[in-house]
Structure formats: structure tokens, C-alpha cells
Image 1 (tube, rainbow, N blue to C red):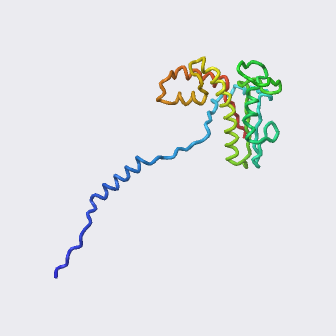
Image 2: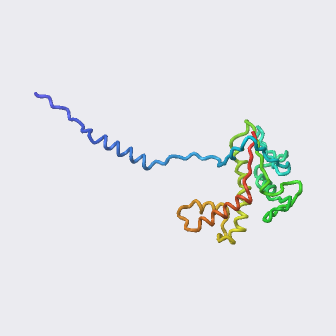
Image 3: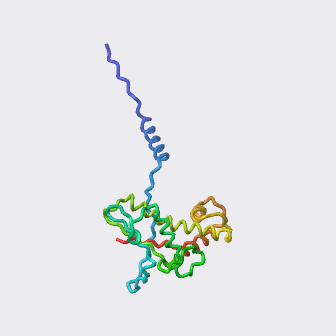
Length: 202
């Protein structure tokens, strides 16, 4: 009796199917984007240029020790109270030159937002979570002041009831049909009036 040949599986189309599946996964898969803290480094100064002299009262000293304790101006403070303290420092208007500031005008605190500097220092043992939470509160203090200023001048410039965060979102939105040139001028003005001077000390 003759032996019957074993049936063969036609694998010719398997490569096509595998290729189609590969394309499908490449198209539908989203690659996670690394996120971090947005910081712009200052430009490199010439060697012959001396660093500016900053008065001690214009420096808001914030430090984190190895036990995750927060010290603000050498006093213990909770992270939840940091934002309000930073806003009070930045908005103080000690020299009376800031026309939009609403601070206490304490002569022992910062002169104005342009001269005020927040100095953040941490130790190697500081936890990353605590460091990020402090960073967030300090940046939020700047955003609070910028939002308030944007609401003040927005109506005069044609952008009523729009805070600083919303202005930046509208400017970055390609679908927004408003006047981006004018909006950029307002954003630049607010950033110039309330510059984010956050210095990290090693």
C-alpha cells in the first residue's frame, strides 16, 4: 500500500500577516513621554563680568535637610504653607516701586518682584518626592502672582477673564484664532514684571 504524503501547511501568507500586525502595533501604540521640571539655564556670562550684588533681604532662603524637614528663613515650615509665604515675599514691595504689588511694604523683606530671588537648597539625603513638592509650591507662587496680574491687565489688552496659565495655553494652541502677537506681548510683559528667579544651591 502506497504511503500518503503528509499535508503541508501553506505558510506563505504568515509573513504578510506578521508584517501587518507589526504595522498595526507601531501605529496604535503610544510611546510614553518623559516629563521633568522645566528650567531655563541662564546664559554664560563673560569671565570679566562680575555677578550682581543681591541684598540679603531680597533672598528667600528655602532649604530641605536629609530628614525632609523644610526650613524657610531658618524656621521650620510645612509644605502647605510655603506657597503663601513665597507669595508674601515676592509681592512685598519694600521699596514702593511696584505699581501692581499688594504686599505689606515691609522694609526688611524684598524690594519688588524683579529683585526678589528664591534660593532653594537641598541635601543628598532629601527624598525626590519632597523636593518635587517644594519645587511645585514655589513655581505655583510665581503662577499665582502672574495669574493675578494677567486678570488685572487682560481686560485692558483685549483678553478679559483670562489668567496667565490660560494665556500660555491659548498661545500654544494652534487652533486658537485670536491675536497671538498681542497675546505674546502681554505674556512677555507679565514675565518681565514678575520674573521667575528660582536659584538652586548645591
